[in-house]
Length: 285
Image 1 (tube, rainbow, N blue to C red):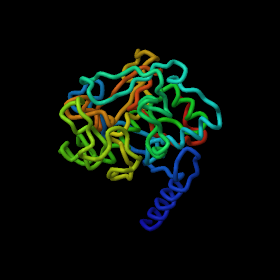
Image 2: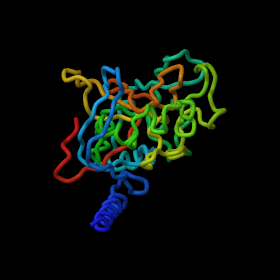
Image 3: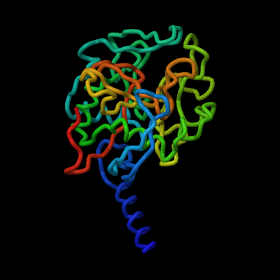
């Protein structure tokens, strides 16, 4: 009986890893088993400590890259919100905390504006300067979906109940995430990991389930609401980004949840995807 269970489990994992999906660079997903999981944090009103029950799902080990998004644009001739609205928000050193620049030239090919260079040598970096609305269009084309808020946290925690999937010592974050290590944002921060903006996906240590960049690099959009009457113009993202530091936007953990307008395009927000299971996953909005 035990041998049979092990064989079935091995087959289940192998199927998850070999299932083809165009949206992934190596066509793999990580299987997350169905079951009960502990998520949230004690004392957090928007994400209280609780137990949730979820079905199994398959999540990408990496954030969606510029190369993948380029394939979508080439196939569909899609124009992002930033291209049509000219309202992307970008960063350069020397800005005060939480201050961003509205660069009308910025969009996913030039996520920090044309004057700061394009992505030609950064095709394996996560795509940024896209909105939640843009991401929904990509997911429809690629046959994938975003994780729900609960699914993202379950995958991020990888079975842990601590503040980080590596424990409670936030000083170790540099081993697992591309974040801002400077005291503030007045000067460029490249001394710790060599990256001021995004890093190539998978550049840092993964969690126990083999998922990379769950913290830092880019905020990752999820589906779902925090409140039943929440505006449909709001979207939520998790995990923090390259811009986040311990002194500002300290969201590179397993419990915090950010929010932004569904049409907003920042140079520190992106996404990873979940495979759609035929006949089970509902259409996202």
